[in-house]
Length: 94
Image (cartoon, rainbow, N blue to C red):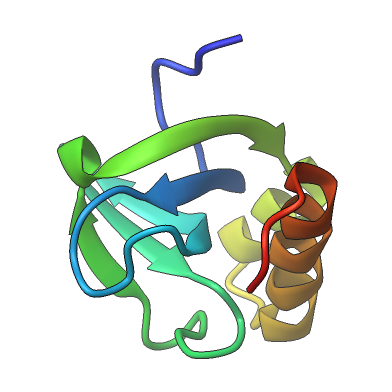
C-alpha cells in the first residue's frame, strides 16, 4: 500500500541527505514541508524540516500520538518508541 498524503502521526523514511534511511514521525505539515521528529536526535520541540519529495511515506500511523501532538503535549518518549517499533518491524537498524 502506497501512502499519498502525509498525516500527523505518520512514519516517513528519509530518502536524501545526511540522514538518508532514518525513520521519523510527522509532527507537523505545512504545504510541501514536513516537520519530523525521531524522539532521540530530533525531538518534538526541535523537529527536522524536510521537503515532502525527500521522504518516503510509510503506511504505519500512530493516531494516539497524533492526538496528543495536536493537543500540544511533548511526546518524545512515545515518538521514540513508535519509530523503534516500526524499525524493528521492517528489520532496519536505528
